[in-house]
Amino acid sequence: MIDENEFFRKATLRICRHLEIEKGLLDCLVYLARYMPADSLYLERHEKDLSAIRFVARASLNGCAKMDMLVPLPEAARVGMSQLEQSWHAGELPPVLLINRTKTDPFTQCILVALGISNSSVMSLPLTIEDQIVGALTLVARGKDRFHKHHARLYATLKETCSVAMSNALHHEEVVKLKDLLIDDNRFLHQELLGRSGNMVIGADYGLRSVVHLVRQVAPTDSPVLLTGETGVGKDVVANAIHLSSSRGNGPFIPVNCGAIPDSVLDSELFGHEKGAFTGALSKKRGRFERANGGTIFLDEIGDMPLSAQVRLLRVIQHREIERVGGTDSIPVDIRIIAATHQDLTKMIHTNRFREDLLFRLNIFPIVVPPLRDRLCDIPALVQHFIERKARELKMREIPHLAPGAIDDLMSYNWPGNVRELENLIERAIILHRDGPLRFDDPGTALTQKPYRLAPISEEDTPSLDTVVARHIRETLNKTGGRIHGPKGAGKLLGINPNTLRYKMKKLGIPFRKHVC
Image 1 (tube, rainbow, N blue to C red):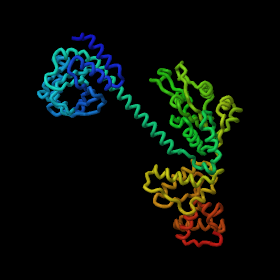
Image 2 (cartoon, one colour; image 1 turned 45 degrees about the vertical axis):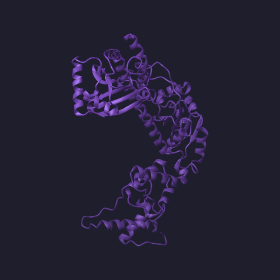
Image 3 (tube, rainbow, N blue to C red; image 1 turned 60 degrees about the vertical axis):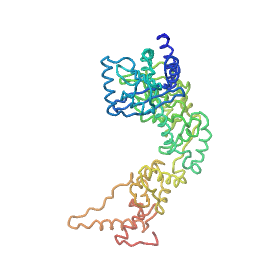
Image 4 (tube, helix red, strand yellow; image 1 turned 60 degrees about the horizontal axis):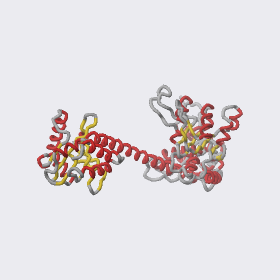
């Protein structure tokens, strides 16, 4: 007979030296087979809310595997399980349940039938966590009357070890699931990023050809990039393109709007903080730089960053390490920095609002993104791109098409709001013309149009609304010499689409002067 202490020590080593619980079960089963009948070993968990037993892992002399098998308990088995738990809490049960005739026990028989095992003997070791039965380690041997009391005494020594092993296995399983969820979320967000910016920039073959050429040159490097250009030109899209075209394309892309974060929490957001660093810091938090490790951080509107944060940013660029707020340890970070601004940073240096040494560090590879008015040739491609995207976002069954001549007004507009203004205009047009071809009212009128003030009308002589509208249209046509279209046409002055004006004129009986229209 083997000494119980030696048995416990060697069996425990075999269970605990494997991270995967199924491998630990197999190693333990091989050892158990030296001293007792042993054909298979099962780790099971009692799911009280489901009135079922969930098998977590199994091992046989032929191999091992993880399991996620749920066995519902019939009424007789549920009653038997409840009685077992009550007896265990009352101290009326032995440490190991030894069942050599399984047909006499409804609970055990239910489990063996579900596992496809018959005519077997069973030793079940209840596993407890915080004084609650959470599962069992069940040893099965083929045939009747295979186990004896000295087998049960040896098997009982594994109670504490297996309880801890099961708790660790459940926590490890939860961590793995959370990791898989994070990987899936990261993959989804990466696809969303790719879907928004694509692996090509709209206008790459025309107005943004020079920009894309620079992107292709700098993307394979880790050099900082400074993107400049007016608000709304698409600096974020260019930053995405640089990231996706680089060796860091599968890593995180963390955008930071430096002007949108209050100064009081900027350090915490960028560099993270330790627990207790300030009031409300209830736990440790990673900052944006740590989250961007292995990828790219995009500092949008870098000109709005306060001077105190600029000093710490300079240290990050120089030493490739950060310190959390309230911490003393230096944390290395492997990141690529892309900054963007619509401001003149050189002028800001002269007014002591931006650090000159920081500009030298960021401006290693500058890229100027031109405004939309300087690349009007990109408008047709941008219009089609935004129509398709907005149609998906608005869950439209079909992608709308443009009305004849609808793009002409877009090509003659100055676009002070750049690509962002164009995107908003298209979304508004899709909402207004869901059931028909897309038409664009004169761009800019939604922001600049003022209400028309008509001459006061006496109460004694109140004309109809159509009369007032017809009078106003005739007065406008007189000013334009009958011209409807164009920048000096009546449609422009009235703030409506020329085709809409033609429709109203026809309805109100206002004649057309075809030689000037």
